[in-house]
Image (cartoon, rainbow, N blue to C red):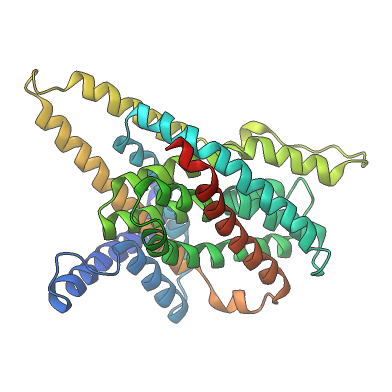
Length: 359
């Protein structure tokens, strides 16, 4: 990145960091001053996104600020997710991934079947239904943007679909951590699997897992939720070409898309960080006398991951325009709501019926 680009992104980047620090300050005041506890009943991440939504709609962000906020949502978020990999051992990754895959497949198929049935009752375009289906079942806005050119979706249809994912994903992000703690009786793996499959966006899942960790002191839940969501993201490689085939079958059209252009490469970064952790654990040991350095470095990277994710969620909140959501009509949101609720219910039922066998 050249110096001019750095100057362009700096104001929005600093604003996101200020919101992150301010949210932590509010968290401390609520927890220590109001409730007399060491932890606030409202997590820092939740405060950051709510504060961002309030400020972003009370005051219109300047275009110069939006450059840095977009950069934060796109790159700082991914860096935060990559850094989450330092928390995991490779054995844990394989264990959680093996358990998560059948649940992910069931949830994806359920949403696709539901959307197919639902559009017969609710009159929305087939393109809109495809966008909502893949956004809800796989990985939110990234999946929507990947599928849109393949099915030649209009900009308004893309905007509607992303608004769906944003609205219901944010609601789930704020509610599901507390619901999971209550419903699964504090069982960390079950809660993590639920958050990783029932919430749409990677950022929303990471934030929900972080909320759960901050409120219920359960790093394992954050680890499971993150692994589950990242594995779910890789299903883009299968689902995007499949959607293109289903929509365009029988049509003689040249569709220019590439597997390499849609693959979520930050997943590789996350796995790479797991390798770094495992290699470091072998090199820096108590016997060698340098374990404290390695432990300090791990804690530092963990803290950076939390800061980056909180910054990203503040940027997301600032970017949400509530007036635009209100102007988009209700039918697509009805479909999106039903799809969002369905994926949550299917996740719970799947966990209750057969996933316990693997745990």
